[in-house]
Image (cartoon, rainbow, N blue to C red; front, side, top):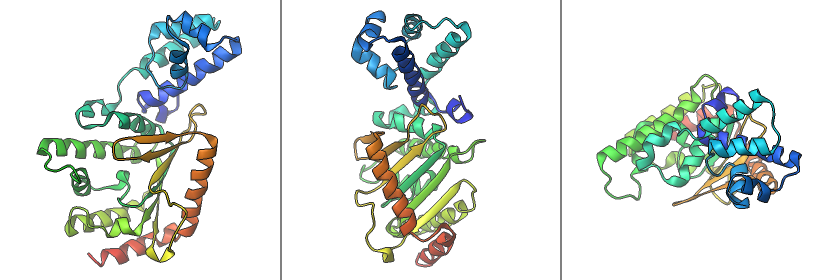
Length: 288
């Protein structure tokens, strides 16, 4: 595992172990049905394991390794250790009371990513939001939220931002629509601080920020905000993440990836280059 993978929590580890088990099964010429029988389960359970969509019982992994003919004790122990690690909760587990179940997978992938490319239409990208901006965002459309719940949601977002400052930080490339920078989320004072924070973020070596100005007219991202995550591990394909109000989509089929990647490239070309970003944000800042 790479350093980023080691920090990722269960999501990426399950995908990596699942892909390894699939290759071993295929190399041994064993069907999913026979593998399911070996672990007292079903073909669909083996399929979910190989896709990293369920947790792993150490006993099941041991039985599959024996069925697949693995006789290297060191490799066996390495994979069993990976299975144990894949069942450990991520750091975000302690925020389970304020965290939607469908968002757990994204946090694991975000922590594992080497590169995150994102387009935002309504909000400043989450990894670049200030605490006051976050505080305003988490209260949107939710009515009156208890203060302690708001604090926990803010704490969760701030904890996520550590991926930008850790030893091996995530590289973030964000294209933000001008409308997101002119919408005074949290009020004028909070928005001024947010814009100033964005200017500071442009000095970070692992952050690239572009602004899509109104004057650019229409552009390729007609479907709205989305992110593309890339990982250092070969077993983890690029993933497109699209968030909805009460759920999210995770796309990894090649045709989807190609389309969303081409759209992201078109956005980066259509927007002014990154070296113009500070001037653009400074101009917007004068209106607050």
